[in-house]
Amino acid sequence: MDTTGRNSMTKPVPEAKSATTRDRILGAAAQVLSLKGYAATRLSDIADLAGLRPPAVYYYFPSRELLITEVMVVGQLRLREHVETELAALPDSTPPMDRICAAVQAHLQVALDLSDFATAVTRNSGQLPDEVRARLREESGAYLALWRDLLATAKAAGAIRDGLDLRAARMLVMGALNWTPEWWNPRQGSLTAVIRTAQGLVRHGLGTP
Amino acid sequence: MDTTGRNSMTKPVPEAKSATTRDRILGAAAQVLSLKGYAATRLSDIADLAGLRPPAVYYYFPSRELLITEVMVVGQLRLREHVETELAALPDSTPPMDRICAAVQAHLQVALDLSDFATAVTRNSGQLPDEVRARLREESGAYLALWRDLLATAKAAGAIRDGLDLRAARMLVMGALNWTPEWWNPRQGSLTAVIRTAQGLVRHGLGTP
DNA sequence: TTTTGAATCTAATCTAGATTCATAAATGTC
DNA sequence: GACATTTATGAATCTAGATTAGATTCAAAA
Image (cartoon, rainbow over all chains, first blue to last red):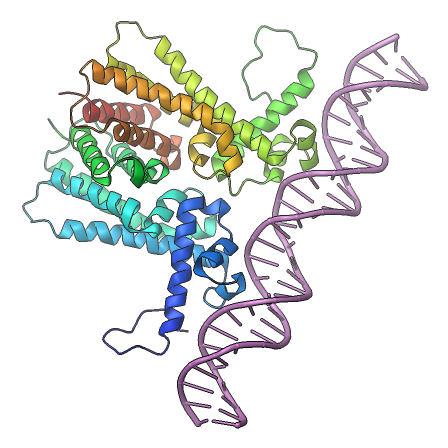
């Protein structure tokens, strides 16, 4: 019944197996979702990848939809937390535009490299049925707010060019970042090249000369 | 009734009925696809919108998948043609960066305002089953090539900043544009503001100072 | 040993849609 | 105004997948 990871310093906990299987299913779902997209994700694909028969999934999740919802929520959460962590690690004196560039880097790292969960969110957020979308709204709103603040602060500090519609600029940047999983592939170009290019685009695109 | 604007000076053409019904179905499919996404698009939604029962669709299209495929191909085609037309209208003397900005404008106009078909493509290209994707490859390759040329020409003319990975830059820009249907809504901001902001982002993001 | 409960399986059910088909309207043709 | 062709329908069929029901396995507790 316990779905939360409450074991910390303790010796191999009894219900450990259950917990890892659940995580394995969740991870498999994230992977399938990030590769095939919501439409094409079958419960059987997930089960296969997790090394189970489909009905076994129901021991851990009440339905396919709730499993997918959890993947999305976790993905959105991890994305935001990773970006927040990286931002928090910057010195207070960091200029606002440098903070934005750090956020760009953090976003791309997690979306392209670190987490199928994050990839799953960015690739599927536009395709979800209303219920899932509703569950996701709060968390994704928090992430958008993070970026809104980042830009607003930069603007207030005079680091952003005049004549930009701030909301549009923000969403265009998010779009550029969110679209990357559609085309980027570790084989044909290094991640750092993409990050550098994205940072350049943002810095010069948004910033004052 | 007529979703395409091709009837102008011509008298009612003989095979008009059949042809317009087919177009109506195609247009309905584009609209549903652009609103709900591939996953959630039911043949019955399309039929409803077109004012028909689902089986009637089979009089015009061999299957749901081929109907959707045609929407995608048409959408991709229109997107490219619209952009090409706008570019062709520019004076030969137009500087390369201005051409890029014109392409940005043309893309956004058609993707956000002019055509459900174009919206359908940009919103669903990442979610399609392999067969549909294969049929689309050639046409979408042509559109990518258009942008590749645009950037390559600008680069050759020294209008693009050094240190950018040209492929990454191009895909990031396409991402920013392709993502717009996910967030833009005519009610909360004018299209021209988005276009201006996008152009600014691209001009300063890619261009030499 | 026996019992139990967690974890998983196989086989059966249930359902939403897509597709087929045999016919009905509609439309045009002589 | 009867015939042929085009267009559309309602009712049946077919299928992929999600979900449920009912075993089965097995390790650990009693």
